[in-house]
Image (tube, rainbow, N blue to C red; front, side):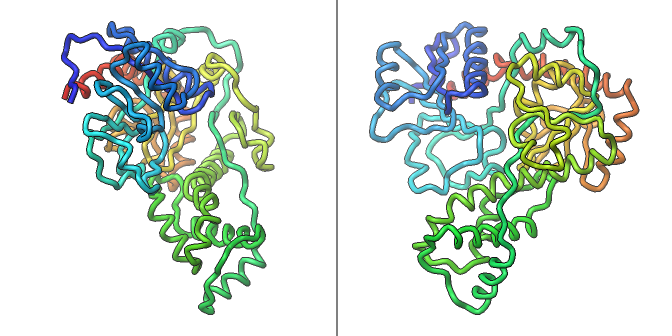
Length: 406
């Protein structure tokens, strides 16, 4: 294995998963972190085809390739000396055949939190660790910028999935057919797929408990497949439905539950991001997309309470860090995974750096924090200091250097 020696200066190529603003911001931030440490890092603005990645490694004498949500391409080997890092920022697709074959012993796989919690149950031949996102120094520097807009009691910046389509009467008929022991075969019609999706939706609603941070996508998938007797030829047709209902529908249930409860506390609420206007109950509070990072930071700073949730219970992601970096107050739920990599308790203390609630006490805790300006501001200040000391991009870059030397 080509281990990194402490004094070696590296040439690093960082590749996003998609050519969107978020991915570009993440890879650029990490590249800047390496620059602070004296290494040369080049952040791309879009993913590359495997052959183009190979050529760039050769032309730029790259030592390390970091790809977001991508493994090695088995058909286009990189130069033998190049170390590969796969940084998965989503739940793992390890149920796909051959996932483990995309790794060599010298590789590193990072998850955006605990790999097991995020669905990785396959043994890999390489080092597996956790790498959460970081914060730019420019974000921290913006903490003391004057707030020019009126404050709002609550805000949430993030995506909410579309409402699912339902066909309840037909679904009941199909459920009766299933209970009669008649397997569903050759699932090809759109109508039949809608029926199955409705049954699966009911399984999620009966199984998943919102705002507890305990989602297990594989367990939920198993429960769905048990609910309808499908033959193997039908399974590919419901793959997209299962993917939506195990990954996105729990997020929808979380955010509907969260905002419904918060509206009982205050109607001073702003919702930003895609999807909110598609839910009639939230349309009065939907403010569309925020196009710039400075606009996002302004919302964090002028919101008395910034709402957050995470279906897997791993709350250390970019939104949390950036909100705290500018002194914003985070209000999020407890999770059984809070003390695991990527969990809130690994970096912050509830009541000291942020507010914690459960589904049972959310209104009480929201009222308590909302009326105590002094404690909220103090918590935001303390959290910002933790960010500055431990969660900048150069801290993430140093972690990678250390892991490459193991």
